[in-house]
Length: 431
Image 1 (cartoon, one colour):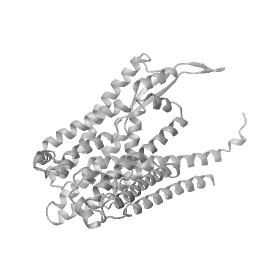
Image 2 (tube, one colour):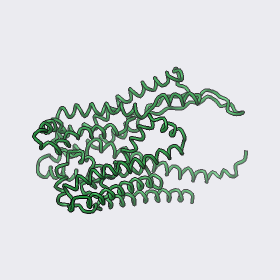
Image 3 (cartoon, one colour):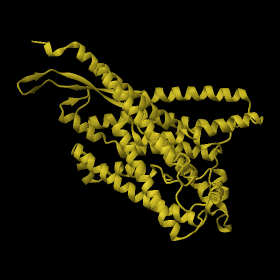
Image 4 (cartoon, helix red, strand yellow):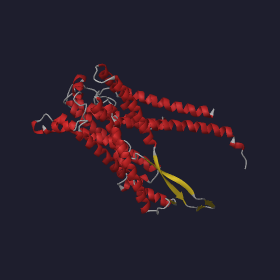
């Protein structure tokens, strides 16, 4: 019964995740009041390769439909990133991080406040823009309900993501983002098949791209699972009346410590020229924006160079801002641990710094190659550019699915362990 009970708990959690995804997808089709769909479609047809196109990707198409989930969880992600950066530089937040669960709850509360503030600012900017382009009745009668609808939708999604994390499996916010990206893949596949039907690309090329995609996913899984383990030794020590023997443990560091954040930041920066050209390029005094935007089109040499440079730079910057090797060294020293051949304290911190620097070089190169692969397909395979199947999207989907499967396996292992403990009948064990 224990085994069946734990498995039923797993199925209950899976059903909750499935139900949450259905609720989210239904919400992406509920429009804010006062939108003219014809004018809205005309507006978004000019924004495919701009920042708005990127935000539309992360919203699962909710932005181009201007639904109550138009901003998706972007304000929450922005607030979480800001809090993570500040928590390593602001003394008050640094103290909160050391307070255990109570401190983490306080930081989570500040993150929610930041989400509401960012959602209001972004929702207001979006509503003002749409008031003059896609509103049936422009003015305050449209802006006010639109802003409150967007903010309410964003806060509901944040709550839904937290519920998935607590009552479901996996990170709820990550699952929402991955679901948003996955909804764009069928359209991208349909576009490729249509190109093949029209004779623009060969069917053999499509098969080759499919095989290459599977190989890329395998490489991503292999690299993301990879770790560099630093052996840590614990000296023999007295704990109460017991003498604790010397032990050995490891400090695991991922090959790609920065995750997908550098790729997202780099993609966002590269969309600025196209966005500025789309918004202001028609002005005669700003005509140079169109020329610059052409040089920064995907596939152009300048685009590739800048993209690679930004990814590599952001990998090192993000790691420096979010990982403090001195704290790791101090924690090891307080627990009586040391790295063989390295003195505790500053030398340990410098050694970990050197290890992370080498890992980050490899991780940055790997991240750059994955993100540039779709551009190579565009240049040499004749595939039409689509933001929904870029390297950043592949990385996000694979990493989220890996985390989801790892947590499912953890629940299954716990149920098997509980069943084993019951069969062992340890209650009758006597010393």
